[in-house]
Amino acid sequence: MHRTSLGLAIAGLSLCVLVASTWLAGCGAAERSPSLEPVEVGCAGCTVLTGGTVFDGSRAGRATVVIDGDRVRQVVFDERERGVEVAGGEVVDVSGKTVLPGLIDLHVHSLSVAGPYDYHDGELRLEDHTKAMLRAGVTSYLDLGSSQHVIFEQRARARAGEVLAPQLFAAGPLLTPTGGHPCYHGSPPGDFCLFIDAPADVGEAFDALLPGAPDFIKIVLESGGSRPLPRLSRASVAAIEQAAGAAGVRVIAHATEAVDVEVALDAGVTRFAHMPDQDRISPELARRMAAAGAVIVSTLAVTDGLHRVAHGTLTELDDPALADDVPAGVIAALRDPSLLAELRTTRYRELVTGWREHAAANLLTCHRAGVSIATGSDAGNPGVFHGLALRREVALLVEAGLSPLEALTAATRTAADVLGRPDLGRLEAGALADVLVVDGDALADVRALGRVSRVYKSGVLLDREALALPRRTPLARRQRTGAGAGDTCLAAPECGAALSCGPDQRCAAICDGPSACAPGSACLFDAASPTGGSCAPGDGCDLFAQDCDNDAACVFWGNGATSCWYAGAGSDGQPCDASFGCAPGSVCDGASSTCKDLCDPRGERGEACPGGKKCVDYSAIAGLPVGACE
Image: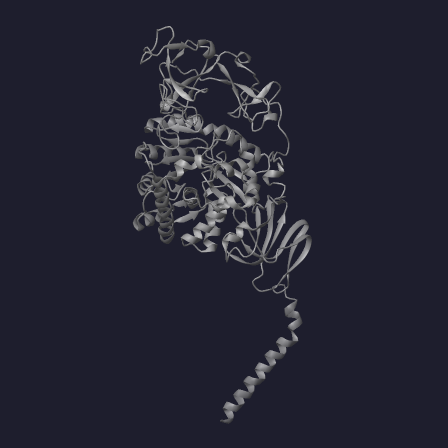
């Protein structure tokens, strides 16, 4: 080697030694550098979750989460293995667990019981369903179809802190054509549906809708999976979207076919309450959806649940722990062959198999095109249990092709964005402290969501065992009393003196017979009510004109009360249907469960009874001049 080169090498070596010596000499100073010191976390009164894997709504890693009151104070990812130094608070070791935001279900029917369609439970199961969601770590949800006066009352109480419940958002009544899903021809709409048959109907519907302050407006686009249904026109959908935009309320569309998606997009609607399952979405349509910023609520759990009920593979029924979250009557009903007959025909099994396949394929097509996916379960349908169904939904997303991180994002951050709530669905400073802790690594296996360790609701650790249904722990933080006649009631003790919480969840006068009610009100008995009966006012429909909307049947209840009721198919000696309904112009005889045609015993209205039958006068029972052909 030349001397010059050797000199440079020695000089370089000396420089390296000098740098190394300097680094070694300053080693202690480097350790004391703020950038490398442990991060200080916690505070007096805080809860510090440390040692686990944290999913913050978009990324995952080893981190510490600090809860201060009802908010997340800090989330510190330990990417450089600096560690944390707890300055104060309760330290909770969550090693071997995953900490993530509380889950969000964007499609729930709070009052539906998840039993077979032919199963009718007379009790209000709202509290049971609320407990099940909380126990599963579902800390926010969107109700997309419940009696509006009940669900808006629950929402008001939850927001006021009167009842322990998830964050509740509600759409209230659905906008659908007369006879459309879910208020089919023959059903009284009550406060469940508003009918839109032309753009001119939109203004009146919004006048009825907006005073309830719905969080979303749900429109129904469905031609019917097994029978033709009326459809909202394109002009009506556009008018609804325009009116909703002016009112500052989001629209979400129930869509079951690709053409429904196209109609919605043409009107500017970009939120969808279901993954369409009647046919396939083309890649071109999926790209159009992505370009429009559309988001689809997946609801794979509903077709999966129906498929498993239809094929007898709902294995949850064999787990004794199911009774902690699902009412015993529902479990029994899902085992009852007589209640499952309609769902287990060969034709129905073929239908639900196709629906499930279409939904999964459409999800993958949309995902590949870049359409945003958010989770919803459609809880309340057969076998789709509140709370439990959302963890099933996340697993189905992974089965369909999403990564676990993508599926968990759909159930947290993306779902919160649909709600317009950036303080939900994420773990970051300032977010609401709705926190779920599960055993295992949910990023490796989303089935870990079924192994719930802890649930914090607004920073408060829930007693999950106390919320199990057999424990009957009340959710109300204080019991309401003294509600007046006509007020909404969610439990019997809420009504004032001499009042009962009736089957329609309104306070009404207690009665033990027709004479105890004012004329025009019937004494209806409710086996679930401790008071037995309550006076229910009729709506005054005409028994002979049969003037009910939506082809519902006008029937008499007694004491001069008439009301629109579910129309059945039977008349003149044919059986009543499951809801004691007969065809309009007939009435169900409860003693024989047969339909009898109505007649006028005075001979002034209506035709004479056919087939030589006589018009038997029921005026004394009905409180009106009416009879039945016998």
